[in-house]
Image: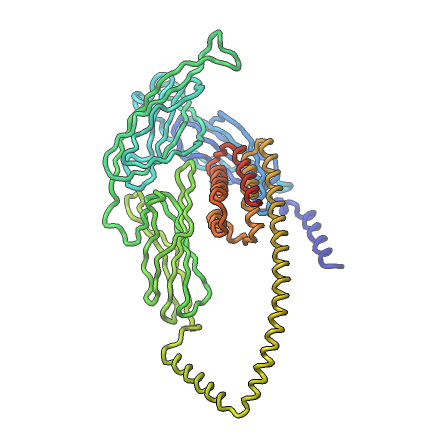
Length: 570
């Protein structure tokens, strides 16, 4: 019996004997999460149970008492293909109203997978005392009000501060538009485009309001001082019922809302600053890798350090840290600089390359670290990446002056010996034979080189055709997802179409695939700048869809992707 047949029979038996393991073997997860762990009495929270790569509809949610279900369940599902691997996700969402204060534990949800029963994690929710009517008396009045809220009323230069526009209403709103924006003096303001936040219920002054964050901005203070933010004015259209209103057309009345004002105090960064301060104000994580193989004396040690977290992207710099004696350090190079806008703020990723030249034969220990300012504790904290060990061994090192002189003398003696050799005619014979052989080898080499070039051109054409074929398949799937109104799956196919085309065309290893690397490759290939801008724009939209749930105009994204493939093909 052939080995492949035996393996096939073994897999079939495994499936029949243990079908549950087949279902649960592909990175499966079953978990429960909430949008917040601490709420006020009278507010709502969102509870979601998620099944990843699990095929089951027999899900049982826990008893939500003392919370009251005011929305759901709503079901959402998605299927994606990444590098040929299929993954699926199904989620069930509930909106719960906090009816009394206290600390409560929600038991795990469960689901049946064949003969097995699996469980999620549990959740701990704390409900605090709701705000008293006096707290809101000056802020919320009437049936509709606008407030601005800030994540911190004190901050530092370079810190991310969230500014939210919150509406409280007991009426439907047909549309709204902001009349003015906050004064930008002393700040860099970054709007969070297409911000999404669920509406909640809140009881104020004995009345029940719907409240929702309708817009969010990120403030980056540029200098210290005391600032007043607001008031912000907004125009809203309220539907009215009259004889001219119908199901499709309703008359509206305009109202002008004016928000509160907020005082913000911005301070300079505390002094003294640590020598390895990277300029970040927020939360920072650090990772580092280095070539692990032994290196020779005089060869380069290459270390990659990645900084990830929050803060002003322009302020985050490459940190300086202590280097062991015997290592010559060079200025770091920025390899990747990415900023991703999310609902919760701006996420910053910077990748630096450090190069060291060892001067001694020994084992070096490099300890990369950096300091950042934690605005919560108002202190500098240190992030480390652990110790990296490099063994420097003897290798092909440059010769000293004395060694070079001795070699020159050896060659000189050898040349003199050859000149005075009485059988020098044998060398003439060998030179003649070598000359003839060289001509034959060069001719044969030219023929082989031409054949290889022809074969390479054929391979390049085959690679080009494969690249175009892969791109067209993904574009066709993306077009189908537009019709089915599945934007998330659409962006997966668009990203696979554009990046997959470049991978196939230029034979790029998957380990080296990133947006920044592909942009650099296209620049090295002298690709027109408008084509590179199209590629960057497409993947910027894909990032917004993946991380922020912002889908934008998917028809426009599709057209730009088609144009990119077409221009790369021509």
